[in-house]
Amino acid sequence: MTSAAVHLPPGPPPPRHLWDELLYFRDLKRDVLGTIAQRFATYGDVYYGRIRGMGVFSAMDPEFIHAVLVSEARAFRRRTIDLEFLGDGVLTSSGEEWRRKRRRLQPSFRHDSILSYGALIRQESERLLAAQRPGAVLDLHASMRELTLRVVCRALFGQEFPGSAERLGRATRVLQEAVLRPKLLPPWAPTPAHLQHRRMSALVDREVYRIIERAEGAPGSLLAALRASLDQEGASRADAARELRDEVVTLLLAGHETTALALTWACYLVARHPELDPALQAELARVTGGKPVSAEHFAGLELTQRVLSEASRLYPPVYVIPRVCTEDVRIGPYPVRKGDELWLWIYFMHHDARWFARPERFDPDRFLPGGEAARSPRAYLPFGAGLRSCIGRGFATLEATLVLAALLQQHRLELVDHRPVFPRPRITLAPERPLRVRLLAR
Image 1 (cartoon, helix red, strand yellow):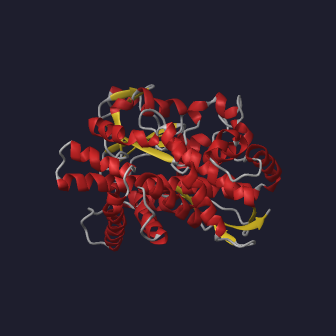
Image 2 (cartoon, rainbow, N blue to C red):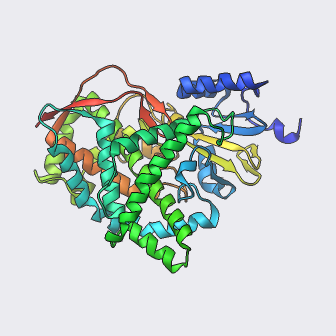
Image 3 (tube, rainbow, N blue to C red):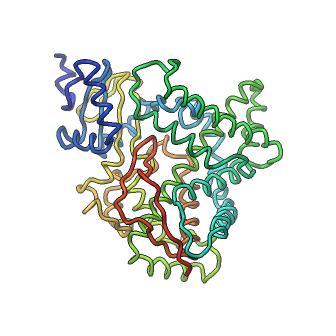
């Protein structure tokens, strides 16, 4: 045993043969969160294992996670396995290429740019609500996904979404399922799962290229600015097309799905806790004076924002952050070797009673100034941390706040099905079944 191995954290024994690996992946597919929770309970906040000769760290410790994402971030890159359908956009690239891509996108996510999206967020919220009759039942995830898809397309690409939100949502679900599939055969093997994955990737490409083709008529959009930047850099037509495709698919899928999930969980929790409704209504009346919700009301909607923050603590859409080590480094007492994988479990950190009292309770007041969340800021990371944190954080926060406020200004939400709902981890954290609420007019 080497001296480095002595200092590795405890963990499960490596699989003895393929059958052990299959059993592990079976357990993960049945209950990801339960399986990982049991391992944290057994081995501690950081545990280590080996699979197929590769070292894998799993962590829910705030200091370990902070080191990987912030203080020692140079030694890590994103894990891109299962994200191949995104291509090489800002989410999956590394090093100088990532910095170049981020600089191109940054102007569209500055504060003044984000505020300019407020009007179209309000318009799309009103569009959704105008289509609902009093007493209508709303499928939260499907409705929020369609709304946020429309917002992203109009705000960033300067156009209405030209495709089918339902079809794109189905493709996204299939592509996300790959994260729980054991990698026993190479991607080119013609298995049913691989063939379906290719079909869904092709469907996403068709939707994305339709957006790019329509970009000529959208001057002033982020997409037009990206195209102009690539032309100035002298990119070939093929390279420019590929880069545009990769950025559009990243912004389209990552930019709408996570916000849709944040809104889905927040609406579900508000419906589960009707005692919160009077305070939310009082805030809306005080801040808006009865006018339609707009960006100028954002700062005053403090309780609405706390509801969203607490929903993202309980159900963080990005519930785990995987990284790959690119150079030998030490994180606390542990040596991390080049090629090791690290899985940073935001979900379990958010549910740790050491950082959040009664962590399973829905309590938006945790996010009052000086509350629990303020006392342990490293334990709350719905948007990641460090230079690689979510570029669209401000956009997503404004969008989710205005949409939730617009919905609650006109309707009280009542759960249709009171059975417990459990999260289903894929690449993001979605509900295991449709969440439906009845819209009761004010």
